[in-house]
Image 1 (cartoon, helix red, strand yellow):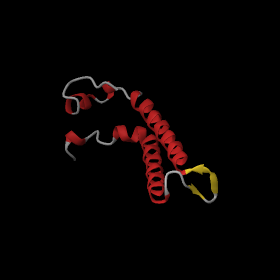
Image 2: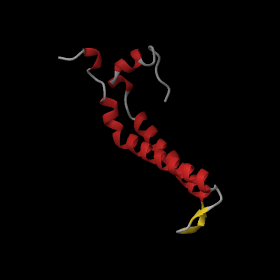
Image 3: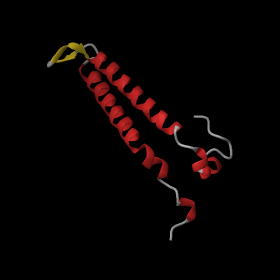
Image 4: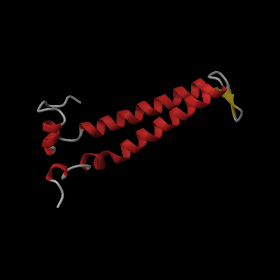
Length: 99
C-alpha cells in the first residue's frame, strides 16, 4: 500500500485533463507562430496566405490561448474544495483559495 499522503494525487488533473491538454496545445501553436515570425518577419506572410501577416497569425493564436485558459478556469472553479480538504491544508496553508 502506498503512502496515504499521496492517495488523492492526480484526482483534480483527471477532471480537467481535456482543458489542460487544450491549453498546452494552444500555447504550443502560439510559440510556433512567434518563432516563425521572428525568423521570417512579423509583417511578412506565408506564401499560401498572402493576405494574413504573421503578426495577425500571432494575434489569432493568442485569442485561442486566452479562450483555452478561460475554459480551464471555468472547469477549475467547478471543483469543490470541500471534496479536496488536503488542498487547503497543504497548498494554501489553511486559507481558502481565491479562484
